[in-house]
Image (tube, rainbow, N blue to C red; front, top):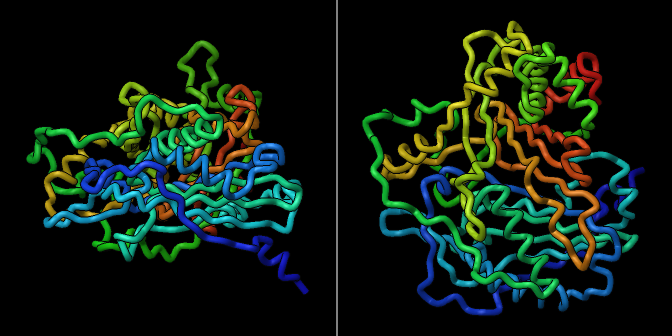
Length: 432
């Protein structure tokens, strides 16, 4: 018989709120850009694992005191959504704060990680969504879980409408700086909606776009009813293995060299094409950071590309280098067109982006491990995206030792595709 502890090792759950230490003002509000609103149905979840010294001796009161200061410099995510008379959402900076969950775990950290079960991380991070009570739904939630050995996990749920992964990590890093008594010169801000002339005649509707799918309307409950059961698994691929994959894809030593992120995309695109026997998957989405459009201290959704790659050839008939060259040279960024669609429709349609096509997200340059608490960096960081569509998402993440140690690849797919993918990866590429 399975004990209660084995069924759910998380216990002693307490919920509270933390607000900024300084009031932002009664009439402070934040408008949202079209790209923000296009991402409103997606949620980012993070789990940072720290060994015992990081939070050792810090009481709940001590931790919350650092949060009061932190949120004074990052008060926008503490707000709540309201709607204008036309129905457009905006953030009322009313300092309602973050929702905080404190919990304990019956297991030691080593016991927890030994299972290598990615689904377990979902017990360490809130799974909230916005709505149906829009005015009372927190945009960000934090979960602090203390393990039996004294280690601590910090889980954060971040509403993607606020900004991309880089933005969320910037937000968290401000907390680490507050713990160390280092404070930014200016508060964290959001990218402003710019007055821009859109070529409305260039698009008939969202049907002219390949990276998005219109659903709903969802009203004030920013979630979708996806009946497909999704599963997440991950693996580490070393730099030696990456170079081996690159050599197998490129073949000619002095020919074009496919970059490492694109090599990972090619391998998985090829494997899933085999599983599907060439049916579908002729369009994929690629998301990468647009560093030239990123400004320090600003959280935004406008600095992540939403690119589309298409081929008319069935994927199981494409050779590896063909896929690599598509990834290198034929990605079409649809951000501007997404903004046009959002602008031309007064009803502000509800979209999904992640998982509409098989979606590859390059997060290898995200500074997850710069979230340092009292001299301790995270032992390990995991990240996943919730509320995605059926084609699935592939996240390419840095390792704890940095990109020189290879990459962590996290894959979320329909449950019935996972076993097949693992078999093809093992048989064709010796990856497991």
